[in-house]
Amino acid sequence: MGWPLRMFQEEGYYFVKSRCFQGRLLLRPSAEVNEVVGGVLARAVQQSAGNVRLHAFTFASNHFHLLVWARGAALAGFMQYLPRGREP
Image: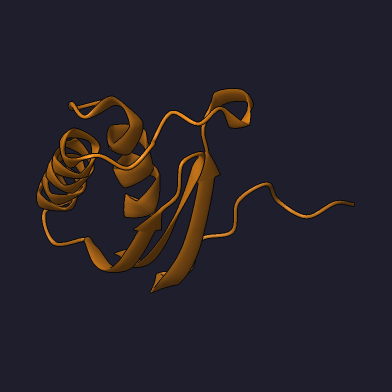
């Protein structure tokens, strides 16, 4: 019997990594990219209604890392919101 695809704790810290489609360099540093990334992250945290707290993040040209504290399955909703920048 295999492991479940996702394992959620009641609440805890998660290290999240995601990469751009096909590893493309879609997040090249610029003032515009920085503004969009910051805005989308802030809005995603706001939409979580206190169930996700962003502690640290770093964005490279083709991927990003997040250190978040999340309650229950709130991380899934947070990550659904993140790439689109709008409500799921």
